Length: 322
Image (cartoon, rainbow, N blue to C red; front, side, top):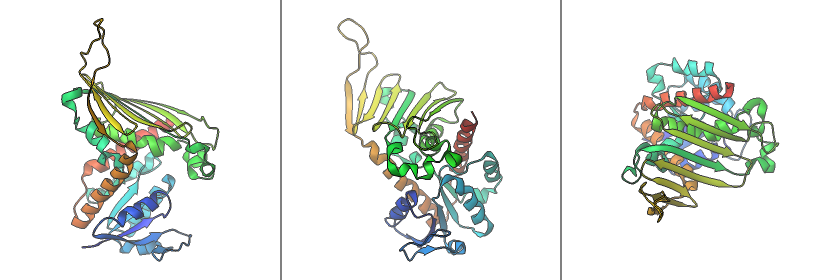
């Protein structure tokens, strides 16, 4: 079987997904839909009904359009739907999705792709528990200078009228979902957005603090208004994992002392290459592979993905209000 795919959108994330689909066996993109544009690609269509011929449709458009296309597809389409995160942009939209029949939910997949990443595997399965023990805290920092690039001002990301919480909805949401997926639903969240670049009208920086019922915490700092930095710190009761500058290092054990008998930094017990910049690309491919495999095998998609996606989406929207 060859899975026939349609995609709504053609630039940015849509372009990445189109490229990835060409690398996956037994699937091909038949239609690239845009309501008005004309591009030099014979797969382009301005006729929405062409998508209804496909086995699956990918929605890779600006966030505020997701629900419109979801509803439009549900009117006459019985195939699988892959939708970029966040699923929707209002609590009423979430309620609509919550009430869908189970058989419909089992054909939905929202692309929180960090669930399929090596970083997610390390955290969720505590792969290094023998060295670091139980995880206490995960701290993630990813920042760069996007808000100072000329094209940023002309993008929908910078428009606060439709995307005030730009960085939360498009970047931090990945890490909130990853924490939600690994540790369960949070017991408390604190969200601190700021507007540091003064370019555009949406927030370009945010700090998110997440606490879980068992005492674990996750903190996420993201910014489009700083020099590049990308690092992860995982603290356990007996050791520490650092990931930065393409290196994963484990420091252990806890009971390491200097000549004065004071606690000191434990020795490095493991050092491996680990490129955080590849995590996103690899997890995106893994996420798409997972979706396509369900389409090809005509299998229901695990409902846990649907439920966790809406739980993350709800948390994001509640943070908007607070």
